[in-house]
Image (cartoon, rainbow, N blue to C red; front, side, top):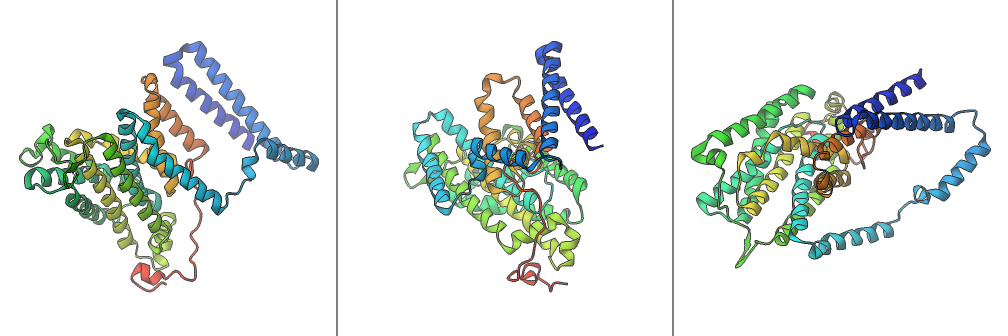
Length: 402
């Protein structure tokens, strides 16, 4: 029965990929691709089944393991603290010095990737840690951008003062959305958040007296430190690099705190978490607020960099892109989310010569990821949360544990 399911699964996958490439390569090439994928999948399943069979001789298993160690020595490699520090120094040098030898286009792409890293890390709090599907996340991005646009053009507020104000304004709307969706889960929560982004988009498009409607807001002030004004792409790169670094540190600390463990408990089983004394109401609202805060910061940076905002920059498709980054990298994994953001932003630029196929490749990659590695590139399979003796659930929940 299990073998039959695997065969049917590989047939479905190969036929599906063949239908995807059919309009581009023709019937003959599509049939060849379908046959190659099907045969490769069947051979792989047979090899896996043979290697795990009970009748396999111990001598053959020993030789196979020894061959694997010789051909793939990195599988048995366990990095030490010294290796991690060396890798950290190397990555830091590449991130800090690499853009100095690039042209403005490459620096702009990396800056855009930094914006999406901040957005994806904020959404990771809501989706990856707390398990709340938010399809309207980009609405907080828009709120932060328009907050700075209005403060700059109407009141002359500087970028550095507007940066926390934009984050706090977005967090306030996040609290409102969290209160509205307290009793909703799953698909119903997703539908309400989808409605929220549509409301925000309609308000930005139609409130001409404040937002200038579809024409957007021009002449937004750029960041400045005394007489020095941020004007070159490299200036904005190092600014978003600083913001992204602070975001990674903050989200990492949150994930390792009592609040982070409580969010994971809610994600795994909200009823059980509530029975153990976790204040699910307060923590869900907190997840929405903190996720919205980082989106607001990214929105302020976006407005400061481009000196222009319009409703067309904050559509539902942007929410889908950010959610794809979180899913692709691994929900709940900070390195995974960063890697997912870099792949989704940089890879389409690398494949710009194949502009007609980019979305096809992207969609196929996401589907295959969900089939073969649903936990993401660097995500870990979900596991139960164990309360440790030093965890004070009453402190996290606000009431005694049951």
